[in-house]
Image (tube, rainbow, N blue to C red; front, side, top):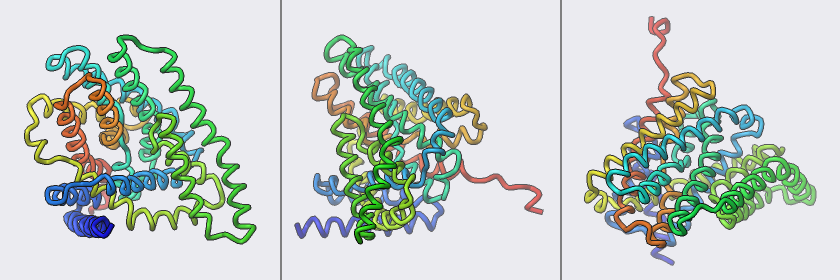
Length: 383
């Protein structure tokens, strides 16, 4: 227990030191936290206990993103977000499959194509928060697209893995996943805001006003668990709960208190842990295929999601920002890859390929996102 406490202290100090250092060179703080974690991981290998604790960070990050959003904003960005997600997933799958096919054959190329489809927006959300751009048109669209993207990615991976294991695609299985997702999102968006508002009003009325944040944190863990239990991503439950609470009168106090807790402790722990779990030594052994595949995966999201944004009515500059924001990969791919490896579809060499993809997408996104959002100098102002 003492060692765990010291471990967490060291991680927080690393996050603060490297975050400060990177802010001094005008780079995103989160990138410094990840790089600091990579260096820390060379000396102190990550543990399961630390990983479990740090996962609270990504839940709170998406919870805060939901609180900063609103159902009306999502409705406005819905059409564009759907276009970004669908086209982005389709292009990523096609490019991933096309790159893998000459190296791995048809069956494994299907899996590699599927592994390029999900997007992990926790990194993008943190950078957008840093730049105060989360509530921008691009930020709202990215969040909307990420929900659809996450669902499509899970469905595609599930279908591919199931078909490779059994030799056939189960229409009932796909329908079951889509039904669960639809019901879950519908309940969280349309019914839960009224239920939560009523419950929190009751809590305040009986004299427990300070308990609203505590109860919100409890609900966060409950809904993240429910999403995971339904074979959906836990971050989907976290984001939707935040979105539901954003429609209540308690949004502001819950957001302010939760933000302090999240960004002081759990979010820095999460990003340092991300860096610690990147096996730098293993990446150095990655072959030509791993490098080509990883670069193709990055480009596929910029192209696919950018085209989807253009089709949704966004400008070229806004589309580029959205494409860059949809680059990161992180958790879903590794979870699905573990299932595929356990089923004997792929060997351990696939782990290095996907880890390299995650590593490169994690490192390039913050500086590219910052560059994409950099405003052009107005010549009339310069005079």
